[in-house]
Picture 1 (cartoon, rainbow, N blue to C red):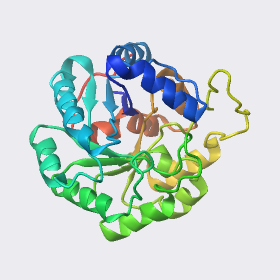
Picture 2 (cartoon, rainbow, N blue to C red):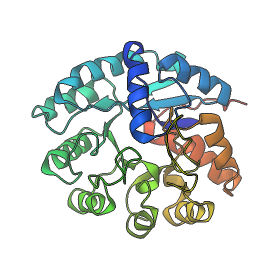
Picture 3 (cartoon, rainbow, N blue to C red):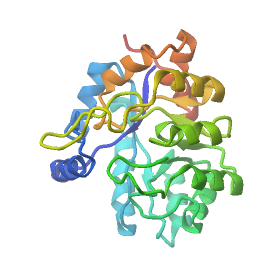
Picture 4 (cartoon, rainbow, N blue to C red):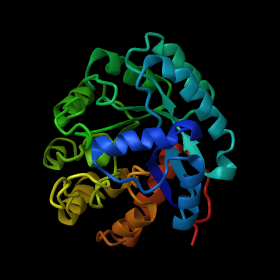
Length: 289
């Protein structure tokens, strides 16, 4: 089984605009056009059984539409292989109701993006959401580290992550980008070995520059193979989740990068899907060849 634990799509009517805007700010070229159809085609070509969609509520009033769409997507997961998390914004005062409804309607987790939501991860508004999500047995996946489109923003930097772990000790807490995009030294020193899951998204491949942008090949290099292996084995391969950040990385190329990373066959099997299936509590499914 192969599970991509970190993907993004947009409604058809806004996908082109959203992808174009994000590509410009990140100076990074997208691999897909951001639609559900494109992601499903990529999954089929790459042999991926499930992709987890991670919507981000950038305004408090977006959560209702996001979560209604998530429930509709999840009602067809067995046929499509798409599983959508829910969205919530730190400024949602009715966060308890929102999280309770997510859990009651079968949504398995939520996504927080402190940078896009302009709220420090250890702000009380995020802390109360994380604590309440834990009470409802929801997975909490957070953007960790810096962001390619906001390289100086520290809303989700390692010290703020450590603060959350010390204050709340969440159980189903997933840190994207191997614990901290482009601050992997700090992540390795402070987060490896803690009670968290790490996903591999946007870490293992070079960033593909967007057309007509200035991005040198040495700018924002990927996580090195030696450090990646060291982090996986120090943290435990059973707590690492395969993710791509599609449409910003190729699913097929990301699988190949993992296969060439030096992981053993058992480690690779766990990272590519076994760990994700366990965390999502999915039924066993034949691995696609």
